[in-house]
Image (tube, rainbow, N blue to C red; front, side, top):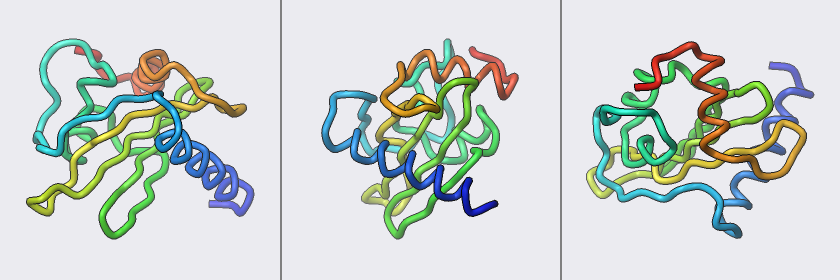
Length: 128
């Protein structure tokens, strides 16, 4: 990955994490990881509480992944946005998606539901 692309991704991750701490954007879930995403339409809320394997089974590999000792951040690319899924360690030492957020490619918050729809369209995966 080129230096410019890495810097670009780092700026997005920093902005997204700041958004987690300071805004009401996104969705929060409990820390009981599920091994699959529930049936029905794929929504930001349906991603919450799932294990990383469940998300990758549904959306494929993320465009970018950052691992920390007790957390991971996965980024999926839409046409005009980036969808971020934040996984945090659970009491049982697994990881569960606890927050979903979206950012516009040119900066600023994006509608999470619309961005997920873009990601699904880009990945060409089933929505239900």
